[in-house]
Image 1 (cartoon, rainbow, N blue to C red):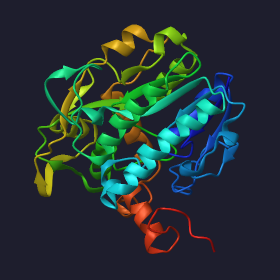
Image 2: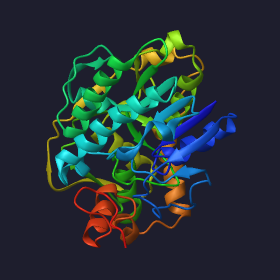
Image 3: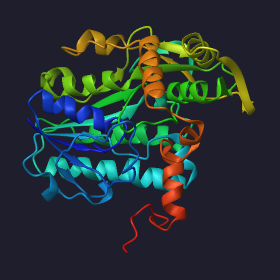
Length: 342
């Protein structure tokens, strides 16, 4: 299968693409390069990559591909603080245009990297794919609206699939330290303290980056009738945790570490648990391998072996918002987050 992966140079993409190549697929990337150089331990594997802003993709760019895996996006809620309209421009409008271009080009399968954040503020129940949407951020709202627009494109020749990833964590060559597990562990390793940014009570569904990559790989080759115009919560049954329990598990694994609260820590309205039984039951071949404890142990070993320092951890390299702000401050990007010609 010939597959285009947008965002192949990001946190998830650099780990997903070698998996797909190893399975025998012909993989091409598409990435604008916001996070070039933000490497941890090793650079991404070489891969043919189209250096195109996802907002500028045309049907001609997509001719000859059997599938598109769409990962590219402003990747978390804090990035929306730069300018919420950019989240809608890149995450919503550009995603829909990309899907339409793919359909025009004859691409048969379009796998969209959605998010459990579209559930927003949930109930006391574990939310399945039929639960109401309740996004509380532009990022979450953009995921809802893309799913709705892609569903309208579904027909006999075009199969969109929506993978609603739980909160990702785990080791990647393009590490992110701005996701909850990686962040708590980074503080623990570099300061001896697990610093909570909230009161610790909210629930989070969690999934290892490699289990996400595995889910995408299975969706790409699954029978059409199983995945056509379907949403799947991506994670593992039993992997919902309150933030305070994540912090305590980090403290149990990292020696001489104490749990504390950051200055100004407040309650977090993003509070939900997710039901992952559909993907484990209905997606052929999907067998998640990672538990939170195993993932923390893996990442702790990598932080330790890599000599992660407090200066490095607090710098812009592993925080997506800080990297983008650095590009803006240095005049590399304009206010629309487009590269400035030099």
